[in-house]
Structures are given as C-alpha cells and as structure tokens.
Image 1 (cartoon, rainbow, N blue to C red):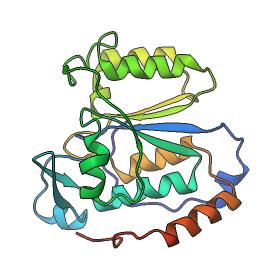
Image 2: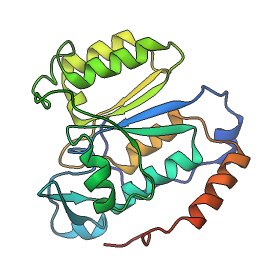
Image 3: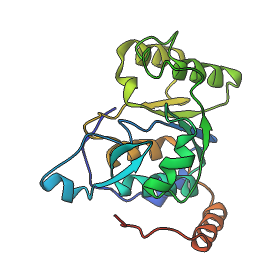
Amino acid sequence: MSGTTEREEPETAGSQESRPSHGHATLFLDVDGVLNSYPVRGLRYYRERRRKARAWLFELHYRPRIVRLLDRLVETHDVDIVWLSTWSHRCTEELEPALGFRHTFDVIPMPDNTYNRFAADPDRWWKALHMRDWLDEDSDRRAVWIDDDLAAPATHARFERDYPADRLLMVAPRFRDGLTTGQLRDIRAFLDRRSRRDRRTAKRARLLTPAASEDTP
C-alpha cells in the first residue's frame, strides 16, 4: 500500500464511534524507508516541511508531521507501537530523541547480523519470523506492520495468504516517500478509537508532558 497524498483528511466521529469494535492492535514500526526516506529538494522539501537529523552516525531525512501523527495515534486509538527495525535499541536511545517523539516505545531487537538480507524470503527474514510467531501465539492478536521491505512479493503474498485482512494490515511505503498521511488514514481506519474517557486521560497526560514544538525543525 503506497501513496503520495499529503493532505490530511479529518476523521468523522460518527463513522469511527459507531462501527463495530475489532479489539486492541499492535503497530510494528520500521525506520529506514518509513520514517527516514530519500533526501527531498526543491518545492517538495518545503511543502512537506522536511527536516534533517543525525542518529547512529547517519543523516536522516524525515517529516516531523508523521512523527506527531504516530505519537497522537497511541492516544486516540486502541494501539501500541513497537519498533521492529535493524536499528534495534538505537530506536529508543537515539532515534526517538533525534526525531522528537514524545512517547517511547518497546523494541524488538534484531537477533543476528542478517539485517534485511532475507526480506524476500518469509522463511528466513528475522522480521517475518517474529511476526509469524507473534500472530500465531494468540489468534485474537491484531497487527499493523509498516515496513518498506514488505514490497517483496513473496513475503507480502505469504502473510496476505495466512492472515485475514481484519487481523493484519501490511503497509509498504516507498523509500523515496516514506510513510505518508494517506497511509496513516488507512491505518486509522483499521484501528479502533479509544473511548472518550481514555482520550481525555491521554490528553491530560499529554498536556502535562514537556514536548517539543509541533513544527520544530
């Protein structure tokens, strides 16, 4: 699922509040090709309000708006976020501060040094093995899996075959774009919204938490 639409459409409370509940979900989040994408120049750089940051000795090119929307997602929807990336614990140690995340998320560390070498092989790629074990452990579990390497046909097809669409949403951003607001709309549509009480509680906690400016470079 790739998209380039950048205009964020407001959610309608009626459509979200009245639809059947599907249950809690976990969002597994990659870094490169998702948050960090190819450098952008010219008018697009300013239109998307792109920024640069440094972490793990790399220069990162990202959109603060996407970071803000992911932060907000765990407050408004029944979802938790887990890092599933070759960055491993650098996600919390370096990436979250560098990109300005207000929340910190759990990490699934890379178990070996294969990185994404086997992304096209669902029987060998460490991320695919983790996702299969996690989903098979409990048939009620629901997941959003965001990774640019899900564009690999064999891996995508295997998971699409083995898990119904109401249990697993796979999102494969294009590396040149990274995660888009259009893809985040699809993600929100897959998730249940939190109750009004839970959202008020999250809002109070957010107001009491020191945070970077919404559009800080």
